[in-house]
Amino acid sequence: MIKFFRKIRQNLLSEGKTGKYFKYALGEIFLVMIGILLALQVTDWNERRKGRILEQKILVQLKSEYEANLAQLEEKIYMRNRAIEASHNLLSFIDNPEIFDEETFYTSWWHIAIDPTFDPIQNDIIGTDKLQLIQNEKLVSLLSNWSTEVYQVEEQEKQYQILRNQFILPLIIKSGISRNLNNNIWKDGYSPVEALDKSSSLEFRINPSKWKIDFKEILADHEQEGIPAMVISFHQNTNIQSGTLRNRIIEMLDIINSEIKK
Image 1 (cartoon, rainbow, N blue to C red):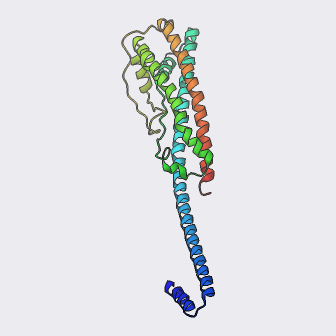
Image 2: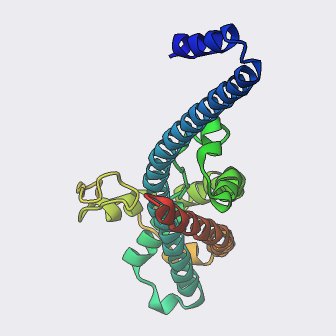
């Protein structure tokens, strides 16, 4: 094709048709520029198409990850609510000893002793070039702030870990109820809420302690009263933050679902 155009220009020059030669040359330059622009547009379109395909893959990955995060977060909120209810049970026994129930007493301390911690999936998108492929600016903003908001919940969970490890567990052991408490949980079969296999249940016996437990003395202990009150405050506060985090996840999932195959 280039040789063909070159031959035409040479013929025009040899015939002395200079004016036509320049017009033809300008036309040829114009056609070349149009060709280059079209090629660039095709290349740009192809790159954008590849970007959109990759964006869809990223969105599908995010959907899966944040659905799992939401399920785990709701599980931890439930565990804290259960511990709050257990704390109210213990306070009721302290305030009204006549309604005391030994099995509920053990179960309540068990729920309080559990340490619910939110451990979301860490993806490889935030903080990388992949984030730039996401077109929805609101989703980008939510994803960028995600780690900061998770950190706030994690900090509160760490405070509860201190309460649990330094005060709750030592109090259970000191009061002499630990063996009976654990036997009560496992003797009829128990499936932890946080278990990976929700259908699994384990049953075994530790057998009750041979020592007589003075529940009146335990209920009269000021520490027995203070711990449940602290648990209620800690878990309520953490659940407030977790509720906000839950709303963030739902908002992200709504956007992701609307952007998939858009």
